[in-house]
Picture 1 (cartoon, rainbow, N blue to C red):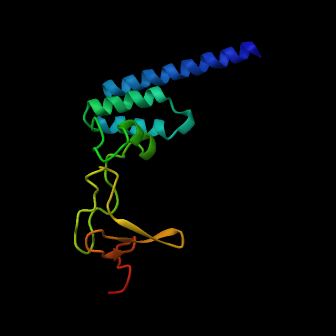
Picture 2: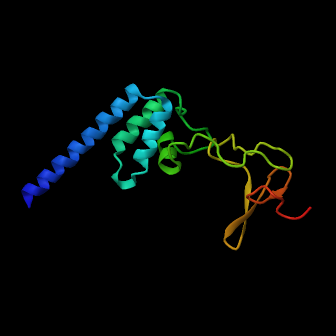
Picture 3: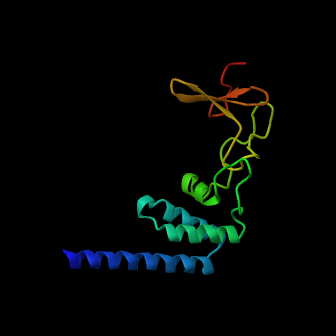
Length: 149
């Protein structure tokens, strides 16, 4: 069993080296979008992902200014933690970015993407509708009024 265990260890370290080589190739030959896609694929492997590859790709995206060097002051997480928790595309705001009633900007500029300021109103253990922190207007996920006006 000892010989087989050694062979498995060698093959997994060889596989890790192959992944690192592929990541280095991505860095030199690929566009920003292709680099983001490669990072997303690697992160999606969860426990099978290679942390060195992920770090290498994130550092390159920071170098290319796709990601900021640091997150906003109100956000206690590092860029690496944001990728780990939110995914490769954490830096892009998604979803409702404007109140359908008062047109207020709902992006949270203090903590940065993916933070939004809209308030999810919970009913029966789920978000039933959204509320604007500025005008207190309410809307459903499909942007229809939450309550008849």
